[in-house]
Image (cartoon, rainbow, N blue to C red; front, top):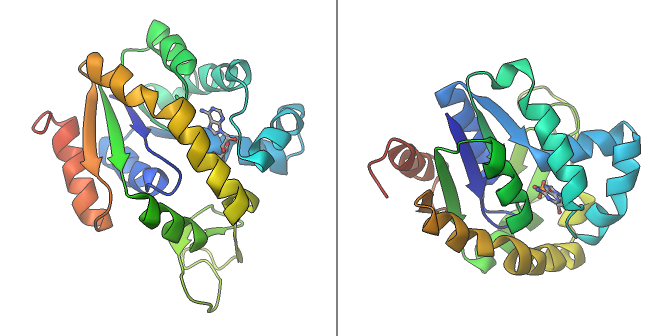
Length: 209
Ligand code: AMP
């Protein structure tokens, strides 16, 4: 099983991807998480990507495609994988489809007001990466592992505006691209985590094209 989740920042791709990857027993591959791990490790790839991420721009296709190609050759991808945040450009999609047979693309649709509200309330665990929606101040510790929570630098208002514009200009064209290939299912992501998950399962199982 090979799945792709696309959607603007804050659409819930990461949250839904974790649940779906577990359900289908496939690897969850988030290019954003991989890049943040490279930044943390202060690797060469991390230093190449840093400026783009800070500005809310896309990291160049060549870097990302290479990173994904290496990742999907790892052992845990034998049963399949769920790509979360990749592809984000037509060039990335064409490259991916040249070597992978994708079963379904889930497009998570969420109104822009909800995206902005969710992103400003998004807190992540420094250790295990778990994501929380915490609109009001309180104790910011991870319920899963007890480590401190933090907000992403690129979740700050100014960068978010750019990320949304970049999504519209460079990633949204993938909706028509995958639709024409008969691979796309659009799911209303502006509902509870459980309801969205149920629609994703129906789409993947072929009941909701
Ligand atoms: P995300 O966590 O998916 O929101 O990604 C965070 C940032 O990583 C993005 O704003 C981009 O700068 C970069 N990034 C993640 N995935 C990709 C991709 N497929 N292509 C280019 N840049 C990416």
